[in-house]
Length: 192
Image 1 (cartoon, helix red, strand yellow):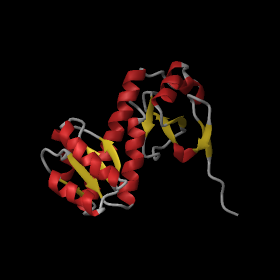
Image 2 (cartoon, rainbow, N blue to C red):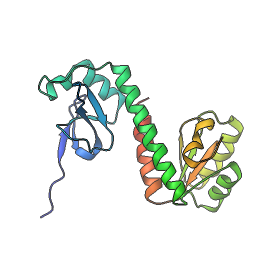
Image 3 (cartoon, rainbow, N blue to C red):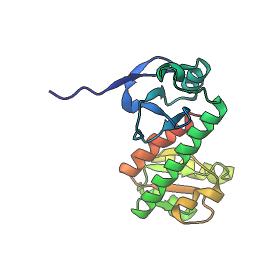
């Protein structure tokens, strides 16, 4: 018989979900709860949904102190949310760099547009400061081919994980990298 998937409850909404669907927190040496984005840090864990609202609720009601049996200090909500956003942004950039090294990501307006037209893309990432006219062109072709679309970073920084300078768009081929990036980008945007 297959082993049951571990369940945990969210400190913010109290909903019980599989552990993989929740954001884990552990205590740092100063007794502050810190996000364990990869879920691999040692120690007792406490969980929230991948949601800004659930995290804010847990912090406001001092649920981390309860979950860690009084050992946790209550962090500042804005700082904790900013930390979660930064850690997700770093994780997304690292995954994008790996996808690029594996030949699964392309950048540059013409190359991305060609990839979208050929149906070679599963994910389109647009810089937050892309020109409205350029965005409309990319969106039209991407939506026509049922490509997931996300905004991430700014054009001065979007190319950095790819070893490039200014980039307004990146396309990722279907497969594990696109799946992981879609999941991580969705989680990232849940904290805004």
